[in-house]
Length: 243
Ligand SMILES: C[S@@+](CC[C@H](N)C(=O)[O-])C[C@H]1O[C@@H](n2cnc3c(N)ncnc32)[C@H](O)[C@@H]1O
Image (cartoon, rainbow, N blue to C red; front, top):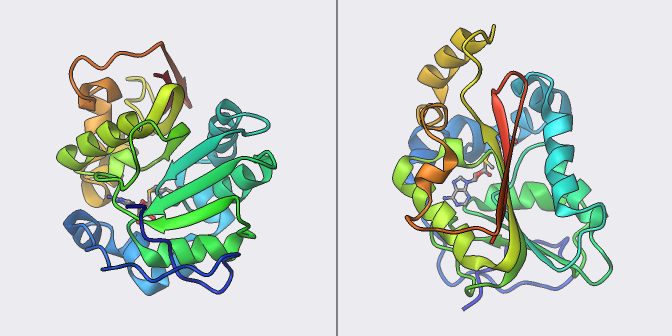
């Protein structure tokens, strides 16, 4: 059964209401309520300059690096797992070939509605409520999957399930692009500051300092290629996996 689309007047095709709303994961409600769940959160945080500030001035280049890996012109069927503040999804939409498709899945309807307000949603784009750890998509149904700063916000068990699902839904030969935090170099001047920020606000993010992302993937997963690039003294990483 396909994931329930989000009903909104801006949609090209009127969408049926979801059979049953999905529950909000506990970590979102308890840890990230102030960032994504609370109705004021979207108003407060979805500002270009704030997204740049939170990523210490690196948003533009991380966004563009991810988009360039998906293609100057994005073809086929692309899945973005979870909305992101800023303009990455509108820019991804602008790159879609006329016959390409983009699905965006997020657990929070408020985030999907916010995204619908940031870009025209034509019939190439579908915004759907869904859980990254249990995607309602068939195996091998996407050419490309994008995960932009999602994994550091998830507890380990959910992160493992999210990666497992991304691997399941991408086609053989398809691509997974992941951008997220990474352990910075020992000399990094912001290492201490970031440690404090993570301790206070992002309790699962340190996992990505202590482990390679491959550590959270199912055992014996094989790839045609793996390309890792780090940015800003190692604080950020981009992983491009070809199945
Ligand atoms: C991609 S992450 C972080 C994005 C980053 N802070 C930014 O805005 O650039 C935030 C999104 O992930 C979504 N999210 C978190 N857990 C999820 C899950 N299990 N399934 C689907 N979406 C999820 C949240 O609802 C939120 O919209």
